Image 1 (cartoon, one colour):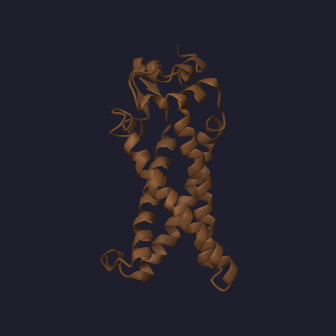
Image 2 (cartoon, one colour):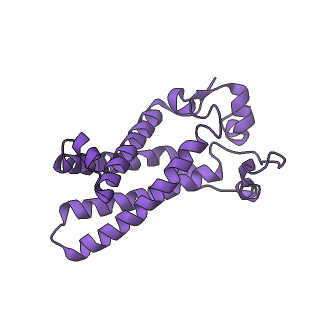
Length: 198
């Protein structure tokens, strides 16, 4: 077996995912005035506190994730460009997918989007929470928060689908952090070579 994800990476991934899901549920409840959801949290005031502090957890977890992914997410080469040209092999099994490193360019761009819009949604949330008396801040914060929320409700379900149903076996990486050596060589040959494991 080969370790691809460290224990703290796995733990932080689940903190980030859990807080994101919690924020999405409470955010939808606020947006559409879903009384049953609000009642499940003990009322709108309690749900607001859960949403606000859940946002703090999400923001801190997002910042911590930078140590795991940002360096790889900012590195691209010719193989990444070719990956885009063949859509990663998702649209056809007849195309030749170029060798990949630890993450494919789709995963890299997804992460960068999560960082950008995650920081935006966190800061705008803080603005709405802590600067209620500033009309300009409130207006801009609501706009940024809403746009970022739309990005999340589109991107995150796609990420979950690609990490489970579309790629059998991928989900176990975020449980154990390991995968079989042969599979690692087949799926991440450039990373394995760089790590001296090939």
